Length: 159
Image (cartoon, rainbow, N blue to C red; front, side, top):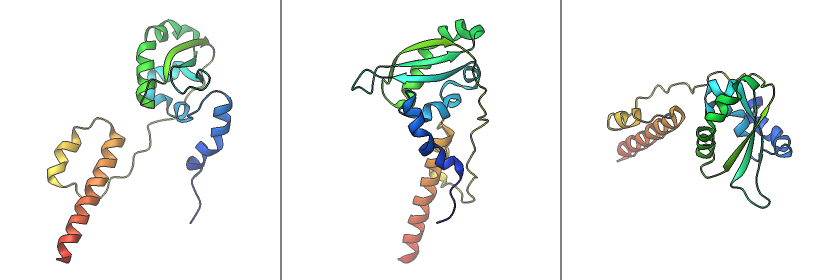
């Protein structure tokens, strides 16, 4: 099977610790710069996400904010809530509480991009895939299109 990269193991290792401190889904912490953008991620970070007992919606997200940037973050709380809820895919957060404190710098640079495939994208799909804004989703759909086009070609060869 081979050795696994440590990056693949970290979510499993950290899951217990994240749950202990109020994070049901550790990816909120690890993907924070992607969720709120690199500018906001430099001045605030998630500390805890608490849900009402027995619920997994309408939670309270507690953020640590650099004191000098607290007024700015206060103004963009609705946008942060919208982005976090979009990340979860449902109304996970209904309130955000701010706490002044030091924010550790994120070491997440640009997300690692998958190497481009050498196979061309079918012409009929190429233009429609370029309009997709999310690069990760676009890469997955391009890969799927390549796989489907290869399957059709192989099926035609057998006939």
